[in-house]
Image 1 (cartoon, helix red, strand yellow):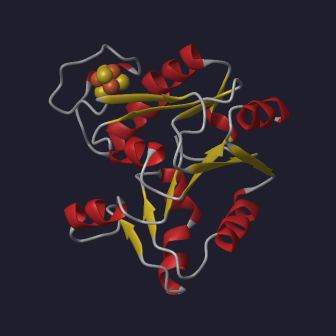
Image 2: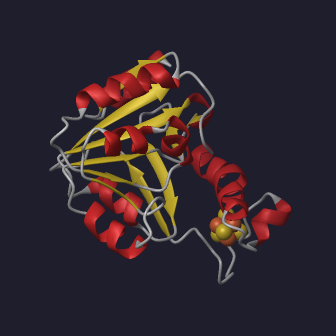
Length: 197
Ligand code: SF4
């Protein structure tokens, strides 16, 4: 993990390592001021950590379409928050963040529009390089996410990507963050646990 942390820092990201998700959660909640607004992208990692409820309970204006009745409104409000929380589909030993999105809200917010972005990543998402990262997305993250959403993409049944033309396709915007983008600061939390997919 030292190699990943060093590579991330070389690429301009802030990077921290945590032994477990509880330590990462405590650190994250200290980093976010109670007066700051927070947007959250679709993420099983963030969901499993229970961060949303803590933020809401302590008074942060928090917008997450996964928890909102009016999902469109939550998506729109999450665009303009000071802080954004998400995970990454994969992170490489070269210190690059690799993602595929269906809607694009998550990857767009990782790149621009927020003062700070926190990306929480379990050790299961670390890959050797970008090629392996896309392989991970196409054989693990996308099939499991499509299954979770009750979609009928080919990968749900085969476990591999066929670059489908399915109406349910969830891979529509692909991003590789090679360096920390201008205008925001991305903080990557690497956790020594398997988290999300
Ligand atoms: S392009 Fe289609 S088949 Fe390939 S991973 Fe995405 S949803 Fe699955």
